[in-house]
Image (cartoon, helix red, strand yellow):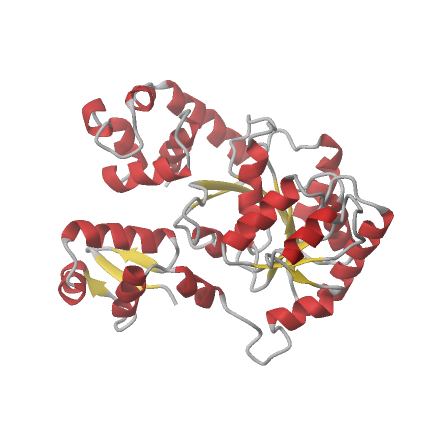
Length: 367
């Protein structure tokens, strides 16, 4: 297990390999270790892998860097989650651009049955602060976990209110665990981890905060939640990026309206005007739209997952759900898929958390 993790970390250390390419390499080579053993000519046959990346993979320096990272992980009690692990956020795994690895510190359930994202401007007004805190107080009876970006403004207001209200809260970072950003929020991050929350990142410990990391961070916030609440935001900025991503991921997006021409209401008003967000005034509105007061308690993660699957994936999943587990030959017979198409579909379903691979080339649907 430790050796397997070492090679997975080495893979994310290679420049130019994003989450999609990392998964492609793994699916073609069979394991992270085999990626580093593969010949250059074989690597070049893999979609998305060019001359430069193939050359980089062949270097041994990334394994040495991975060993240092593994040492840091052990010293600081950090959990590393691979995208097919049970503890990996299932909601996030539904996205085509989900992270290959996540580094987590804390003890919150990243698959909590209700996760709400709360975001907004870094220059929060006093009214925005009050509304953010009021929303969290109102959400407390609904047993939610709150995810945000640990940034200045609405993000940190949300995290702090969650701490004082005993609501588990998750901070997603655009830097590694070795450099909490912004540093002023390191104490809050520590308290989150100690009080039923967590901090989360896809970046290795020596990665510092950079501008291009924050849109990547935003997709994790958007993908992890069932509902995203935008408190205050201008027309442009990270909050609008997150809201657009959440809308594209088929999440429920909500926005608090504000005065016309008020700078930090413009973004919220625009989201409402363009039907990308529902207008809310309080947490009760969120619970109503999410149907949390109904006996069913709203949509389950699996219902959300099934809604975004491609038709071929849905058909294959229905076949697998007809038995406790199934051999790949039987799956091929019932699905009438070619071996290549079947392998692609099974891998996609496995990454989305809908299917689990078993020993002996057997597969089962995840309930």
